[in-house]
Image: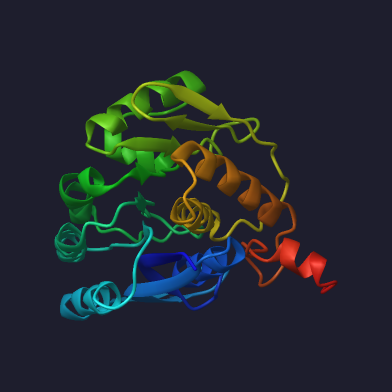
Length: 266
């Protein structure tokens, strides 16, 4: 069985972070492993507190996995401090996995900042150049390229600027613009639009985590990057369409909808 490793924060509410990543790995047919970088006290409404994991423990989690189990792809999520970014970057340089998908998590659905301001430059310097693909949404991309993105034409310009930061490929998610959520894939040579349909639901907690993890899972299985992205977008669209109305805030997506349908589970 192919494997994927998530390096990210834990969401006690189960909708995002490590929990979402492992669900997405399983739903997309790979064995999931995890390195926890932070523990959040979180639900569908808010992030109440964050406890960063000691960087020695983060490093040793990474080493424990790579020293024993083949890793076919890595997904990276919440890295809240410069020291955490550098710890993870150093470990990945040591082990050199073939596929690294970076979701530059900055703000939770409830508006809580998950990435310290001083960690942004560290992410740009140390992590983005190691990544096979980065998957920012519009607000995250605006922070990284230091410009506003208001139109699809702006997305084209921003994707070029993101590539100049050192990533090999870009998936710029367009869900924050008006209209349908059209995402832009850029491999340094060609632009490809992945058109989506706006699904009217507030239950979108963990969508970025889930999408990037699905991409990593499909890369682990040997798909090309563009094919992995297309399959992941199909998967997250179904998960959002059948999202779960749990909690009083932004509920989670349904990671296992297709499996539940086949098993006739409600």
